[in-house]
Length: 186
Ligand code: IMP
Ligand code: MG
Image (cartoon, rainbow, N blue to C red; front, top):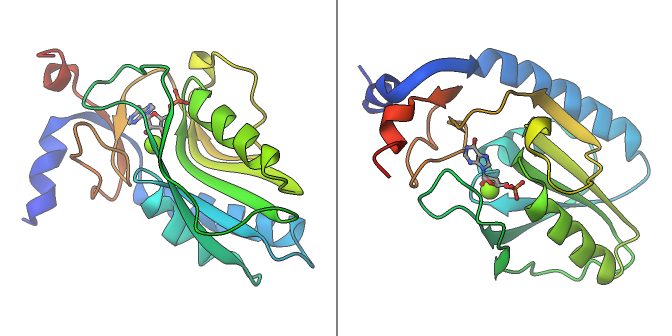
């Protein structure tokens, strides 16, 4: 058994398999390629959660592009959003006059992306769109347009394929619901 397999014991169940993810990511890459034809976007990965999705997605987009990284503090080791958004690592590039595609792991309350979107618009980006692997629409607290979403999921705390709980489970190839016994100790 591989080292990562032991982590599956902490899941209540698998929600999205790696095969389902691969199929959706390929479809999304094709759609983005069509939508951005003739453009050269800056594709921004929101660290750390989006990194696995990001590296798969950019290889399905057949366009010249630049990549960049941004880190925002969110949950700490809790499963509840603090609602406080802080920029921890900024982009290396100037986005003014550029088409920016922000890649995120999950949209929950929407606070993180709404902050990022307005910040990039404020810096003069000509367009800012959002691509997310997962979307929990039931939890939205702000009005946010999400242009590209792979899976809508119920209100449950999920890990894997980049998503963590207390910095663990990011390396699981599938997305699963974390067993509540893991975090009810909090
Ligand atoms: P929002 O600002 O409430 O939309 O939160 C977005 C961020 O919260 C994501 O980038 C994740 O880091 C984290 N998050 C929200 N839901 C989950 C989850 O179910 N599992 C792991 N992280 C989550
Ligand atoms: Mg995140």
